[in-house]
Image (cartoon, rainbow, N blue to C red; front, side):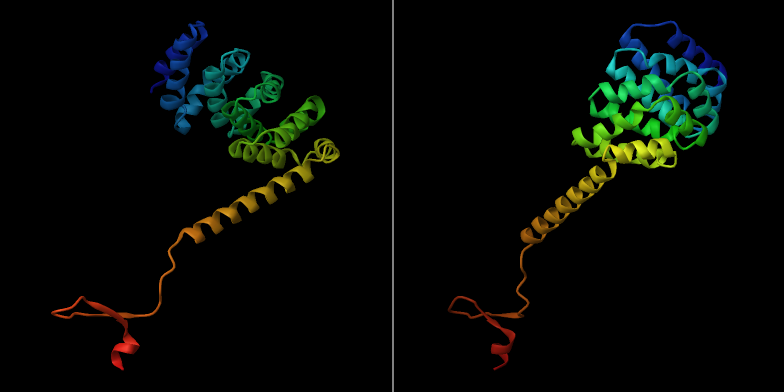
Length: 229
């Protein structure tokens, strides 16, 4: 998609279309624009990051899911993450993670937070101004049973861990204990799954057998050792 087409698509989104149309436009951005480095660069240059940060206030979960997905992909790049931070992404993002229990949204929100936290300046800002980020993540560790959400929450914690103020707060909230508990739970479940698989596998008789064909009587099966004798 060329620059003019991307600009037109963003203008359509800015026009505030009704929910279904907005959703379709955002899906088109995700599939046709940001799938390449050149597409992300164009999207960034045309103010797409700022536009999508503004859409995070929309109360539509389907729209939010796509917005978080697009921003998560873009914010792996430092320039995009910096622009998102400058336009105030942290407050609505942490609010979304804290208050919307939809697993798809929590998963994408934690992924986006982890991508932003790759960059020390943003991690510092989270520690300084967004202390509730640690509460949101540790709450997910306690309350969610969705594996994908938990993995992304732990990834975000790992990215934030280098910031001392966040690390101290997470330790005080029992974050390490919760992660260890989850790892043990996953390990036990994996062990049980392996045991079940092993129990279901048929036990093969390692003794070699020989079938004796008899013309006027049923065939007879004997071991090779007995056959030789």
